[in-house]
Length: 294
Image (cartoon, rainbow, N blue to C red; front, top):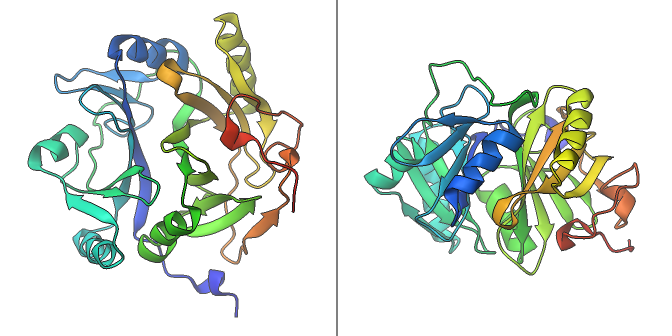
């Protein structure tokens, strides 16, 4: 029997936000609105930005040196089970304070550190916005789509995401591992690395035209394109990755495949074409350089 076809529904609901540690918040906010095309949220607590119907999907945080991602969990019982399993397996996890929850616009949060040192917020009831999303420029953004995470301990990080949190491996390219927890090919991609942190933050857009329009838009503003335009053979998405403030990398993506219920993880060869079938190579981000191998 194919176990993928009968796998239980994941308790992971959505990738709901990214919190970026920044030292120059005003310039980062200007980039997020004027270049990325996100909508600023008027709020006295933090620099927040919207990309869809959620209250925010990007937070620019000056109070921490550690960036993090937020994952919505189905309910209290599931979060309690995860907290117990994390403790049993030796992962660092703590309940967020009321102030930390308020800054994240969630009702409860478990702040987890993976084996690499990346911070992951497991949250309940993230805030939605009652107002229509109104972008600051016509980039065609449809929402926060996925993130790439560096992994210094791939086996243990995978154990956290799959055995404890309930994500599933959708595909691998070399040792790069794509993780799904909804109907899309992936929301998290783990990249073997010697560092911690984010490889990129990816926003979905409505069409290939939007990708190409933004390709020229960022070039006109002398923003460095790091990877693409290209197509990822595993997920089918067309992508454009470019340099952001303070060393962060942002991406637009279109056409991320749905995953069939009976999908079995595929192994793509360890070679550059497994990350871009069009031939775009990334020379500035080590994690996006697949060495030739098996």
